[in-house]
Image (cartoon, rainbow, N blue to C red; front, side):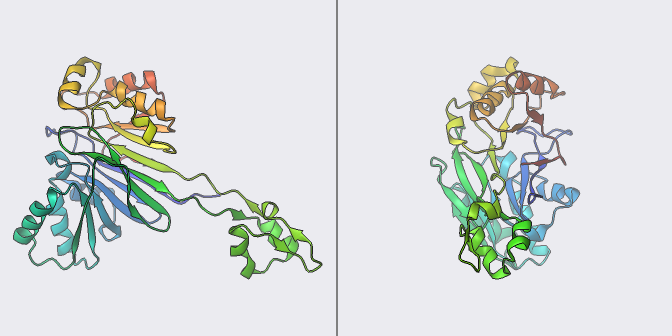
Length: 306
């Protein structure tokens, strides 16, 4: 069976100090035709255009914390949505301290927006569901940084099983019964014989989940909150040579990110939020792969399947 698209588009993977190599942190999670932005550093809207992503398909922006390299692109992005004639509501999720500042900025720079911006204050200290639709949930992932901070976990909901086409043909099952069978029913033949549900269907694919963890110090027990995650993005600001810096500024090393991935049993680890002191991120990659071989470097315009 062909699985529905579930992808992560990397718009920026740098850290606080601007460089000519990387944009500040921003990603877009694509799931079943919808786009969700995670963090919105400067240049995020430009990167969306470069990536060919549709502005009209985005309805939710999640901010992990209120450091500039993760949120200074927000007001410009919201202004552009207005210039494009957006009518649909935009939802912004962030720590409560952003709300009065955002309202002030919108009133000053975007006073004639054609659409409503709805703010959702999130509790960065609790793991809880903050968004849900028919196929997906988004939950917070408490992290430990210098300001209130949380990551996000995007989880597919379990799908119904697939009905076997040959069983439909063999038993002449009417279309009206297919949904009942998917929901767990068997099928009764004209002579009263009951064909069991298990014979009529194939199991659905296992649900996928994407976890985003930036910025944070190394949390030894973070893996306990990552059950079922298939792809993990974890900040890897420093290599081993700057472990004291990571500890001082509540960031993680590549090796520490890999340790979280290994302990969580994820399928792949994506690392990013690189310190500007590293001209070649291969050092970060090699140190992470010593612990978790399924580690990949992120880079602007790369797209990863969850």
